[in-house]
Image 1 (cartoon, rainbow, N blue to C red):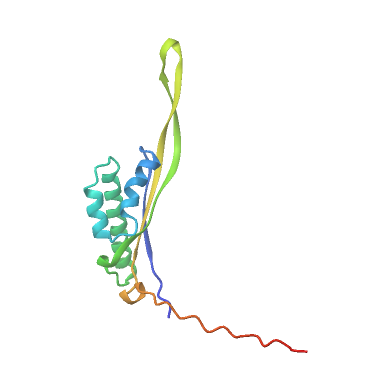
Image 2 (cartoon, rainbow, N blue to C red):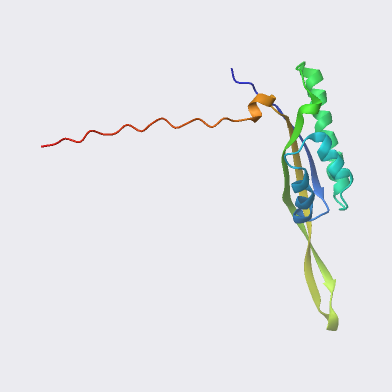
Length: 144
């Protein structure tokens, strides 16, 4: 019997930070349990960290809400960060004054952040057992 794992998402679009800087914080929390990820985001000294904390809280709240609405059993302690992405948003082209009447162009990058949490399977499914390979059959060659 295949058990369906549900995924709960939250996204923050048009954040004024470069995707590279957001990925530094997202890499810290990807794959971790929700409680540990919330603590990591709360104590990370990056400007985007409070936004990611709020976004992760929103994804957990979405999971709780859907569980109560659709009436399925959800163990919040068993949730983990399944996906954490920082995608490029549109770029704002800006001009900075330069010496001798010139102008330097630069780009202000925006980011779309997507977080999804899912419930881990039972502890038994976390451990995978390696199966021993079946012995290879030898081909009998024809002798003339």
